[in-house]
Length: 479
Image: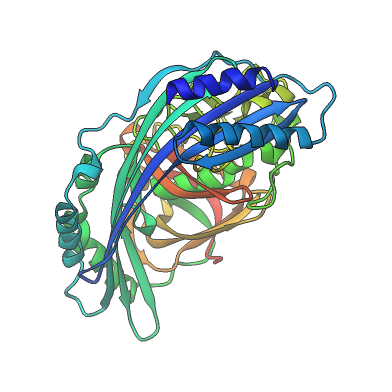
């Protein structure tokens, strides 16, 4: 395949200002249980070529299934035809420079999840499912397993030629308890039964699903009779998973440069941030330090090179609360005068054109110790855990989130369990209220499999590093 793509780029080099080609083969496995029964066993595989060319500043893209030379050549011819059919831009800027990618990258893992027998996977999942049942008020129990493997070869007309293998694995459990007038859900280790990492089978077995199953069911039942979470402005402590989603929605999406430039809007909006804000916009408090890091171990946004051949690297987005960077491509980086692309161009599959996507967008840990230390340092407030739902406007400015569970905090101690918690805010005001972030010991990466963007829509896997954090004077009880 390396020779085929190199030959293809030799042909493209004489006919386009720039060209790149990917051959991608992937396999995805999804298994689920429901109330002690096998609910789904599914495995999907695909492979094909995706070819881009740039002529006179205009892009053309085409894709073809398979691995044969004829398919690759067909995709190249159609991509050239598309680019030539576009309006040509006089004086188009060259792409931001990048050393041509060479070499290989592979996920580090111990056990390939696709080598594990189905019976072994189901055995663990059914044991966890069983651990959540027994109380008649628990009316739905679910366990989920997911695995994904992608092999990709990339070449460009600039001399790039590299290959990489990505392996992902994970899952989770959930219990739903119901009464005559209510239904409550508890999930573990994260919401929507998914905690996936770039790792092998050992990640799934290390989640502790069986050990935590009874507690999750008990909490779902307890929520049925728990007091309603109070409403009003108060101190808010968020667990790491909810902080991660807050970072995703109100920081990561807002700093995608195609949104900032107004070229992405149809699926999830534009951005309240503008290019001239770079270096001066006060995004949050001085406790807020956010980076884009495509090198984070086990991150779903980690790789060797993005789909433009830009090597994975880390760079600051927000430092001590001030805007310092954007997520960019080689073209958009050049347009606003950046020296280098952020390396954020990725495509869902061979059949989709790469667009700017998040890598691992991480909120740096602080110095506030453990979650229990943070609670002990809080006189009065609420602790919210495990996302349940969210809504955010198309500029990523005003939002509301709900979580599965909350606890009151009084005199530095965790108090009563509370149900139906929610909160709302305006992005810079909310992040401006951040006054404490837990330390490295509480920091972890949270994977997200369904980041949607683009038209046709593309779903991307990303991760966010976060630790529990505290926000002052937040509106609680709105959703």
